Amino acid sequence: MSDLPIMPMPADAAASAPRPSGGMTLVERAYQHLLSMLMTVKIAPGERIPIDTVARQLGISQTPIREALSQLEAEKLVYKTTNVGYRASPQMTPEEVHDLYTLRVLIEPYAAARAAEHMDDEALAILQSIQAEMDAVVDRDEQAYARFAEADAQLHRLIARGSGNRLIEETIERLHSHLQIFRSLYQNGAQPNAPEAAAREHQLIIAALLAHDPVAAEESVRQHLTSSQQRMDRASGTLRS
Ligand SMILES: [Zn+2]
Image 1 (cartoon, protein in one colour):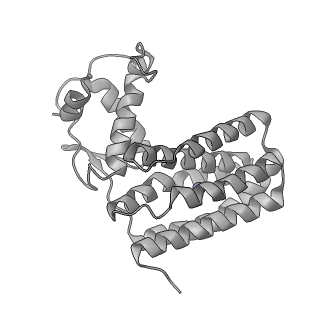
Image 2 (spheres, protein in one colour; image 1 turned 90 degrees about the horizontal axis):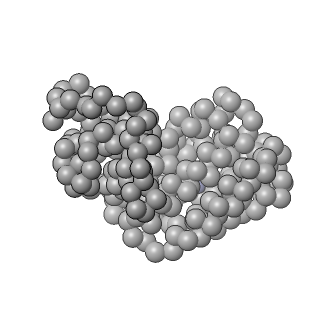
Image 3 (cartoon, helix red, strand yellow; image 1 turned 45 degrees about the vertical axis):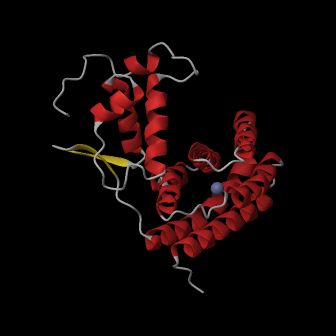
């Protein structure tokens, strides 16, 4: 499969190709499809991802699929091996998820306080659109679940960037925690980071940022991450008392 020649196109050719109906480029469509398959573990951890099959399923060429896969590789959701091609990344253990939250609780509240002070109008406008997007996720089908995870990732990324501290931003970004965590939970058949609870917590965070209130921003992020950690622990049966 991986020995098929790739068409000699510039890297961004597929991305700039005419948009099919629905407003998404082929790369975006391939990305959304694969993301949803990974997060709902229809592609299991460690499983090989056959590019030709995916291309057939979507009725598109292999080029946008390869591009989508390299985006997912940057997000650590898949990895490339020499002979096999792409595989889904292995699952995080419950302990790893717990530790990841511990690190986030140490860093992100500080980032949020600085973000409340620094955020410019453009970032604040994006915040409002994230809020709207999260509010729209009321049903619990798989696509909605994936969209919620993405909006969550976007919110936390915006806070990291808003900190105005490059090292903090990169550290948070490198954790690539959101998608991984949602994925690991889905595996257990649970959605314990209940969109409803998390959405309420996000509302408080966004309100604090919009009000340029560093104290409230710091506290609301700490609350959110601590609650998330407890929900994760409960779901995976590793709750430390
Ligand atoms: Zn969140």
